Image 1: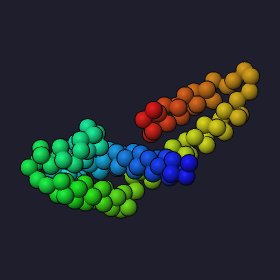
Image 2 (image 1 turned 180 degrees about the vertical axis):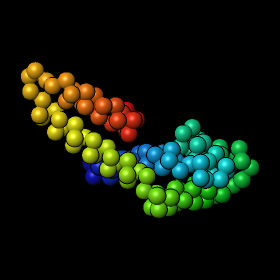
Image 3 (image 1 turned 90 degrees about the vertical axis):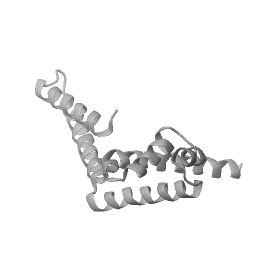
Length: 131
């Protein structure tokens, strides 16, 4: 049972890392080299194995592993300097708080302006989190 718990946590951590890399790639991917972009896309978006990528690029599996590791480190460095993901999260949190405050203040019958504001916030939140 402990082994299953450890495996579940490991899988969750791996999934969270893949999501984070994907989000970093969305923001900073164009700043990577073409080879780094291709490796990340094949591995994370198309679910290719290291061996498949290595065969496609004509390099070793270790070389692909190194490219992926360096690419992830580079994306993290861009985020550390530019903080686009962090700023996005702050905006989404603030919009959520504002939306909740507006929803709490809505009385029957609801003010048309409050409903319009809620619709605008919903639209912004959809843009921010991509839902």
